[in-house]
Length: 233
Image 1 (cartoon, one colour):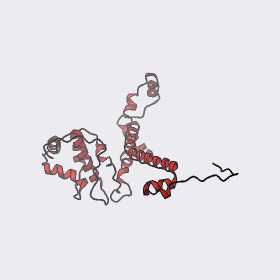
Image 2 (cartoon, rainbow, N blue to C red; image 1 turned 180 degrees about the vertical axis):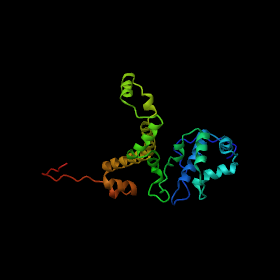
Image 3 (cartoon, rainbow, N blue to C red; image 1 turned 90 degrees about the horizontal axis):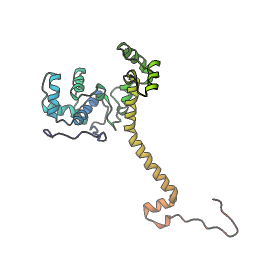
Image 4 (cartoon, rainbow, N blue to C red; image 1 turned 60 degrees about the vertical axis):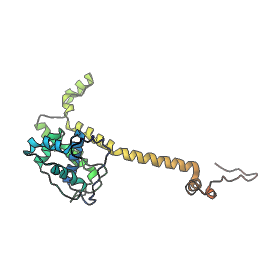
């Protein structure tokens, strides 16, 4: 509701789109725009005020709402590079924020075979794609830590300035954070499956069926030993 501040999203809330066909990157940007606004605890009007000096105009509340509905609904909204830069500066977030995949969105990106929830692989790049990235960063004076930096780290126990700005290190940290986020559901499912099979081993198949049907005929009855013979475990 406009005029009231919304609580920041805790990372578990999932806003799944109504459109279950293919997705495009603009929808991902729209999703992250809303996440950024809620992260800052701003109303839509407050977001418009923050964006005004960067866009050169005050967006009406309806326009902010339309941006956010571009992910949940069927209406498309296309963003240009300057707008996404304005979003990053207004919300004080890195550009990469607006390209992170929405949790639980397993649609394919339009005209590709890439899955939305795996978009971070495209955003951060594969290991075999990083060579040109490092070359560009070196041109900007940012390099991987050399032997001197590593020696200083071993002595002081602290990361060198170069390592702190290393793209490889930052990329690894962000990828690990994303994997932790998505692994929660997998871990939960694995725990539930483990508990199920543990219980099945304890009561047996007949006992499990008896529990579900409330039918004593299915209760497991151990076989009795015949006189003069032994049974193997």
